[in-house]
Structure formats: structure tokens, C-alpha cells
Length: 242
Image (tube, rainbow, N blue to C red; front, side, top):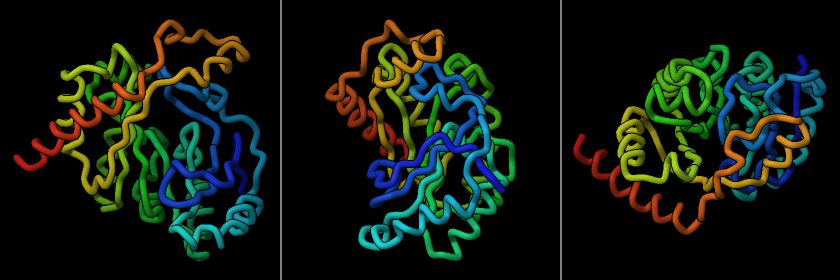
């Protein structure tokens, strides 16, 4: 079986614990306003076999062992290539490799099966309510909700990721909505706020795509941290009052 791979990061340090090999798979149903990887929207040609990817991953196994690292499947949306994921994850489990899945939870099903094989889920939260989600992604929140149901059943640990865009997420009302929403997700180990940046803007120009946030300033990292601290206080208060 083959996969459509956009790129491979050999020594990733931010997509899960330890040193990781990060496989960026092509294809995504969402059209997030703040997307910094529009070149991955389309599936593209299948260009890697399981054997080729496994070989690249296994080569780094000595580094994984030193600091609890492993492989992370990211994108795009890796769940759009779920049959490939199922096959390769079964073989990676046999090889004793820690597997993380970086996803928005918008795939084509088989969520219970793939979650039985992964060790950690990095869940990208787009927006906590239906209207905001659709406005931000041009898609319905329903598929993500299905994934969260499977995720809760799986009992797998979750790291939450939330991009903070000025004018959308940088207010107390949004923090309150997000804190309420996350109460429905079990086994959350970590919550990350990621400041909106302009690093992907040149890609829109190169691809001749309209950039919907071209006039929005980058999120100030200091303000993002302040928002995070405020959010965590709200989130913990809600968690203890359940």
C-alpha cells in the first residue's frame, strides 16, 4: 500500500514527546481561515510505500529510546488515508514504536480501529461551537464530534492544540466557550495555545490562492501566554466543579 506524503521531518521536537519522525500526509477536507499548509489540501500522487516509510522511521529508533520519542502522523489530515495508517501502524506497533496522531478528527471513519493502535492523540480544536466552526473551516463540526466520541471510548491520552487568532479567539467569551467544550473530552494531559503567525503567507501567493487573513496581525506570543494562563484558570475551575 502507498501513501501521499508531503514531507518528512526527521528530528521533530514539537509534535509529541521526545525526538520524533513526523510524517506529513496530504489531503484535508477543512479550509481553515488560518491554515499555513494550503499545499496539503489536495491528496496528490501516492509517493511512498509502507516499507519505505517504515525503513525511515526504524532508522531513528535509537534516538526514540533515549527520550520516549517515536513517530507522529500529521498533515493535512492523516485520517483521510486511514487504510494506509491502519496497515503501517500495525507494523510499527510490532516494532515497538510510540505512535502519535496529529489530527482535527475529520477523516473518513474507522476511528475506533486507528485509535486502538495509536498511543497519543494531538487534537486540533478549530472552534467550540457549530456556527464558529463552520465559519472558520467551511465544514460542519459533526465529523469532529464523531471522532471525539471514539476518542473518549479509546481512553487514549490527548494533547489539545488551539491556534489563537487575533479578533477570533483572544477574548474571554471564547475562552469560556473553549473551557466548556473541553469538559466533554476525556484523558486530556496537556493543552497548548499556538499563536497565529504569517509563516505560511507566501504559500498562498505561490499557489495563487486568496489569503482570508492577510490583513490580520500575528498573535503576540506574550499576550497568547496571558490568555493561556487565564484560560487554564477557567478550565480547572470547571473541571473541579463537575
